[in-house]
Length: 336
Image 1 (cartoon, rainbow, N blue to C red):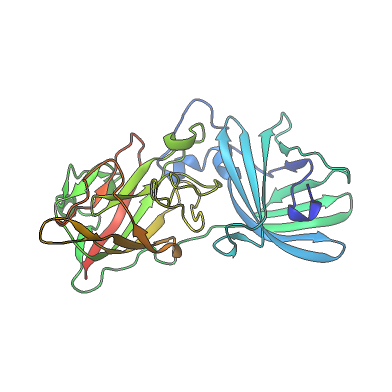
Image 2 (image 1 turned 90 degrees about the horizontal axis):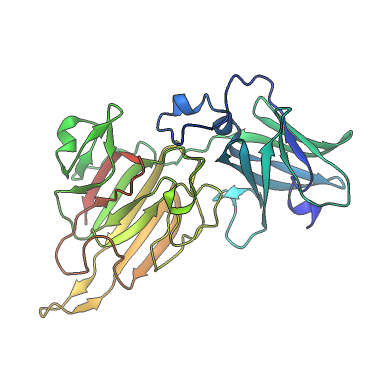
């Protein structure tokens, strides 16, 4: 393992100046950011960006720390910066597991012949050094989608705006947490070619893994699922956030940490059928996840399982229920 490829290739201890919190132990999920903020695991996780320094040369890196429950963590480094802002699929990335020790430090261990580095987080800054030698300096960042809060244009169909009235636009529409839309709903309105904007938030479920961690889905036209999942720090497969099941992986995994609001912005062209009902042209889709293109005019060769079969009829928007408390807001559609 090359030292230059990652700032955390040694023994890394994260120390916190004032932690009046507990590790995630008994409770398994959080849906309120204010409550989750009291949990040490939630405080530690997040994104950091800065420079790795070797022989006087600086290399930009991004770091994602993922909480795994009971004081366990996974750190993933990205040479060039964070996904979508410097790092792209195929660039260097490395991962290491770590855990909280009895001194209140999170320690990540990897084999390295060059010594021991200690990284300390304080006031949102991560400083790593070998003795008196500075080897990395990063700052915690709280990224936000550039399309958060996007207002519906003239002529758009507003499916949900936080009001009780807009919840009636959905079969099984239910408001939770004051003004958010619960998962497992389908629009009463149907659409053909259209643009779509929605905002979603996955829960903080540090003990869960894989498909059990903040799982939902956005079924465009009721037929093509773009996965919603807490995929923060994962590879970006077609069954992870932004993936289209059995069709395509996202160009880049743009998943932000759980309990951070995220966006999907979609441009969809429905499949075409002849008078006999035979498909003569596949559907196509472009999707931005948190403002970054993850599918670019992608051809949808077939439908994905779980809702409607392919067909010439207009389709619904289905926000999948999968047993996890995913919530939505600011959902609108503009026909083309």
